[in-house]
Length: 309
Ligand SMILES: Nc1ncnc2c1ncn2[C@@H]1O[C@H](COP(=O)(O)OP(=O)(O)OP(=O)(O)O)[C@@H](O)[C@H]1O
Image 1 (cartoon, rainbow, N blue to C red):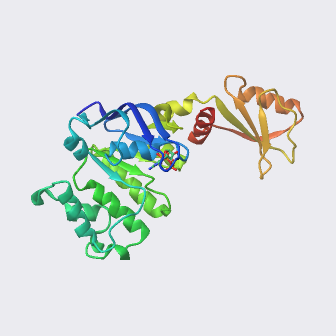
Image 2: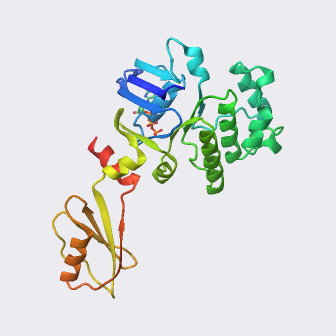
Image 3: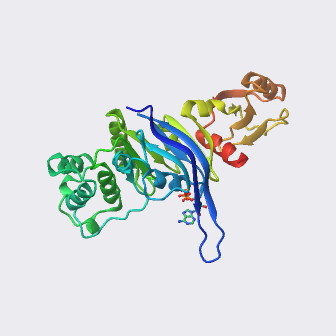
């Protein structure tokens, strides 16, 4: 097993402008290693270059410059093995409406050269909860079922790396849970998972490592816990006795009043402590009934990093 399931070196992508349009540099020379066995989240604002990165890994978009290794196989020197090592669940729900799920999986297995004896069509349909729809026309499947069919298609050649591009966009909570349970199961069985999502809470919960792309550059890549620890921000939430207005606050502290009357003080751990701030509030005549501190979330890290870029 290679240390890194994916290695990108100096990955650059320029989309050539058509009809007088200027060229668009989507990736400015990305270096990225994704450890084998991880659940890795690739995050970034709209247009940052996430899909471009994923589509290059999957061999769906040609890179302009750089090196791509999938499961140790160089994409240029060993295209067949590198392609066989990765499966992609695309963002769009594009499935052939006239195929049944079973036929769709069989065709996909054929495309990847999986011999009939090694096909696991029924087992995969069972796993994604489509066994009872195996013979239904795809056009009669719900959005959630189509999503699961796409996951199933990406798995027919048993890839070591599974990439999910926005897998839960527009998916209800129940299906989302089911999808994540299954992804965790695959990961526990050894599959490296790469996903993009706009739901940062989901990424925080699911991913052990996160890379953040902004304007075609990798602006952070670390363990999720380390990324969160890096943020200096923290919040003190105080429930006052009776109604209390926000008093004057020390320099560098931003305050807000929540709907339930709680006072929230946003501060930097390196500048203030919760104790100092509590003393300050008491000094301003506020009687404190309850208090709590809140750690930053991935959303805060994300905002800080993508704003800086
Ligand atoms: N086929 C294309 N031709 C020209 N420009 C493109 C093409 N595909 C993407 N781009 C541009 O490249 C940049 C990166 O796009 P990409 O789709 O990779 O971003 P993304 O991070 O996946 O965004 P989103 O979150 O909106 O899916 C954008 O500026 C986009 O407009």
